[in-house]
Length: 159
Image (cartoon, rainbow, N blue to C red; front, side):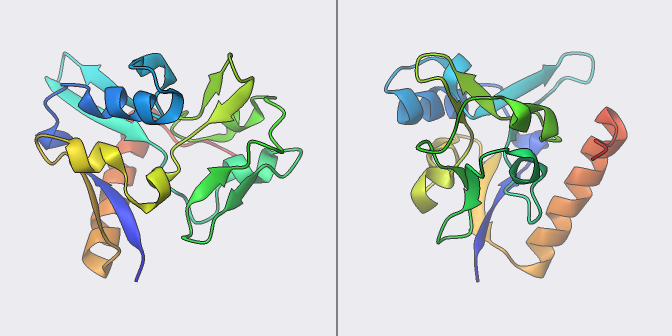
C-alpha cells in the first residue's frame, strides 16, 4: 500500500523547520521562500498550519499544464518534470492550496515531490504535525476530514 502525508494542524509549533529543510533540499539554500511547504499562521485562532501539495489523485495542476510537465512518478507522487516545464505558472492558479512556487533563478516551477519517498519535512518535524504514513482507510478518512475543514475556511476551488 502507498504512503501519504498527514497534517495535524493542532500539533504545529510554527517553528518552520519544514520550510527550512524543504528549501535546502530543493535549492541548497536555507530560504523559506523557495520551499514547497508554507506554514500559515492564524493568530486569531492561535494555530499554525503547514500547507503543502497533498498529492491529489486527480490533480488540477496536471490538467492545466500546457506542456505535460506535471506527471505521476513511479511511486505515485505528482511531480514536475523540469526538462518539460516552461515556467508558465498556470499550475499555481489551478492548485486548490496554491502551493506550487516559481523559482526565478531556474525559471521553473517547484512543488512537493515527497523527496523521492522520504519527505524530510515529516522526518524532521519536531512535533509530529507532518507525518508520512501508510495510506490506510482510517488515514485517508482523516485526510478527507481535514480537507473538508480547509474547504469550509478557504472555499472550494472551481475547475
